[in-house]
Picture 1 (tube, rainbow, N blue to C red):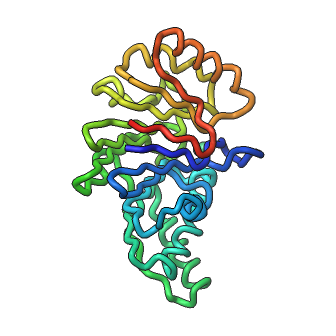
Picture 2 (picture 1 turned 180 degrees about the vertical axis):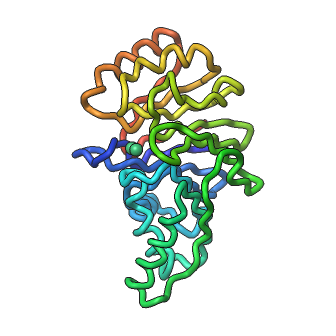
Length: 241
Ligand SMILES: [Zn+2]
Ligand SMILES: [Zn+2]
């Protein structure tokens, strides 16, 4: 499983960071967690086709996690006709809006995309990948996603309220090969007591924010001291698990 960070920014783009968008490649099938930026451009620049996108999992509806969905649906409607991804959305009203947008933009040439409402529990299983949604308290209908494939487990926290409040308990119940956690809404060192209760092989901090950057670096140093591999994600960086 290869995890590529297309965008690592917090609520708004920064000079060297696009908004949140993570691509996961499993046996040449493509999946996304959040799509806050133009993912089709990112695919094209890597020589990949949107026809191979099987699933898109939106953690919550804030714009920095969803802005790329309109572009994606638009291009799928007329350019990538072999694509049939499942889009898991915490709020299905967005699917109606996208469909309406396509009617205006493409003169009713829209092609149905399979939208599914994210609810707690297993939201997706295609035989290669199982995705479990875990509610968080960042906002109304916000979720973390656990990806399980090829005998590996990767947890994407999405945005959180605070680690002591809504860090997904599933991380205490099973080993994680990779934890992708956010660093924008609290001091990142607040993760440390939670991590002590978990079996995590590699921590990656993304979605970080300048005012909390010192604590992100403190977290990094503390995890290095403990011998735990840690990555501060930058746009286009990749982690293979
Ligand atoms: Zn966010
Ligand atoms: Zn948010």
